[in-house]
Amino acid sequence: MPPAIASVVVAVGIVGLFILDRDRRSSHTSKALGIPVVWLLIAGSRPVSLWLQPGSRVTSADGFNVEGNPVNTVVFSALLAVGLIVLVSRGRQIGKLLQANWPMLLFFSYCALSTIWSEYPGAGFRKWIRSTGDPVMVLIVLTDSEPAAALKRLLARTSFLLLPLSVLLIKYYPILGRAYSNGWELMYTGVAQHKNTLGMTCLVLCLGFLWRFIEDYRTKGKPHWRRHLLADGAILATGVWLLWTANSATSLSCFLMMTALIAVTSLSRRDRKLAVVHLIVATLISLSLYALFFDAGGGLVESVGRNPTLTGRTGVWRQVLALAGNPWFGVGFESFWLGTRLQTMWNNNVGFLVNQAHNGYIEVYLNLGWCGITLLAVLIVTGYRNVIIAFRRDGQLGRLKLAYFVAAVIYSLTEAGFRMASPIWIFFLLATTAVPKPSARLAPTLGKQVTPSSCRVPECEGVS
Image 1 (cartoon, one colour):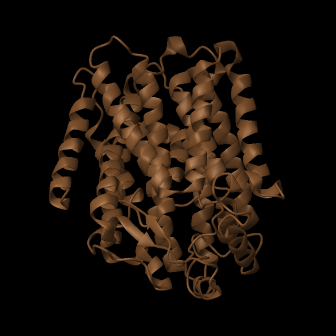
Image 2 (image 1 turned 90 degrees about the vertical axis):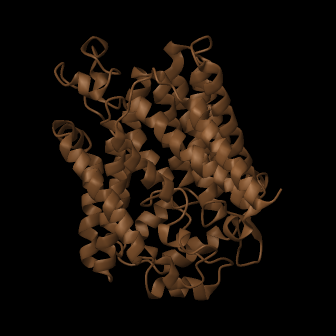
């Protein structure tokens, strides 16, 4: 099929997906939802500057500093500014949310403080300003009049664009949708810059649509359930195909594990759900740790098509730790992969051009030291508490948040998951952000999910 005809077919398909998903009788979300949609579209693909230069690829160490590009700076600054205006207009909701999420505030505050001792304070602070856009977008979704509906539409609007376009680029526009690694191995990148980035985007969106598919199936018999199910199934199948094609072992493994998590928590009896949740979470994390770090023979890793070195990651870990700065405070927020250290890693030629530690925890340690690791641990522990509270209050939405939380924790064992403008990080924040119980007067502004009659226990003080 000629590329022009394929483009028309995909465009018609995208329009068809939006039509199938439409439901005029459902609650209306704020028009401000378009801001996090655009933010996620960029985070899940590639910087705007690279879209304006078709076929361009990073070929030097300086090329990774795309945050300094004026086009990207203008786009992200505009989105952040408009997002902040929206949050200011929502007043008291935001104040209560910030008070309830002190671990997140503390973590981001320390990130800002760390730019003081960075070798590149200007670049570090600029990156920190951009990083605040992630919680801003999360808060826009959570303070919508219907947070659950806003989340569904965020998933729909990004998935209906990114996933079909990735298929189109891979199949018919190889200069945009394919690339070669350092070893001249063909990679299928789709709308992203790298196969692992495409895999991460597919992981996040596929989990959301797996959840939507299950929930829409349970509405069997209600108006429009068939076309909603058709849209969910089509986009889920597309995402799974892209996961398999991208051959990103981390994302594919996480998706399979989270599918099992969602399935089991959906089927278990209500009075056993919490016990099942804790057991499955502990099992999945323990199994991942064993396979990656304690399986001497590497049998589990090899079963997903990777060698015991995790495709060179163990070598990267040794080299970056040798270049680490102050062990307590790190080298400053997002400052490790700048200047001479980045060039040194490229000169060492570990087998691929690297600009991350391929481990989220090591990445935090390099930039923020043990203080950053401690604050991240607090964020994870309190985040898990919030997710469990959400699961107890609303099993449907809670299981999706649980899947995003566990996926981020496991994904970050071999990729830099706790990194700004990363889809897995954005949805980790969305899953773990606590939303305080509204008063009777404010309840209508926070949606119908939480009402005084449904909040008779202390656990209602968590995630909505």
